[in-house]
Amino acid sequence: MSKIIFLGLAGGLGAISRYYISGLVQNYFNTTYPLGTAAVNLLGCLAFGFIWALLEDKLLLAPSLRLYVLTGFMGAFTTFSTFSFETANLVRYSQWFWAMTNLVGQNVLGISLIFFGMFLARIIK
Image 1 (tube, rainbow, N blue to C red):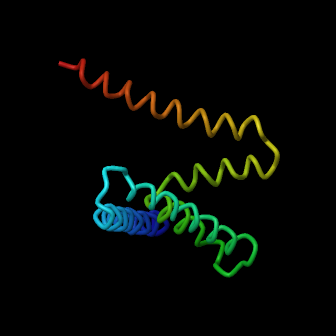
Image 2: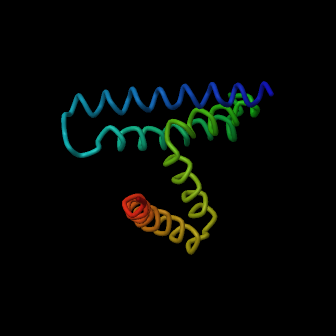
Image 3: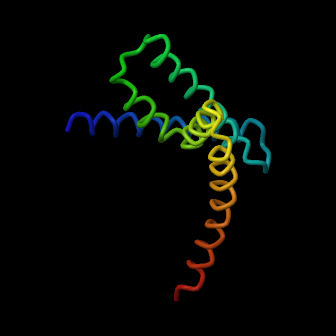
């Protein structure tokens, strides 16, 4: 049970961090482009790769922290970092077909499903 509580706390901190950083960037640059979201997603990718290397290669952090940091904090901060990491791993292991399927499929289907979800919500009476 404590694992779930710590995971939830880490996720809460990630969500709060996302909200704060995204808003800070968006307000600072005052643009209609979603720069705050882009900044969080890209920062999340950098942080995910950095933390992964610390956990895997350098062992500077205890492996048990992976769940809390990568799944909890980073998962709430940005799922884009996980998507990017998984795609990068497919490329790293020369799984080109699956890398492109993941990259194109999730983006195209994701955007399409946003519109489909909006359509479904509008036809409900």
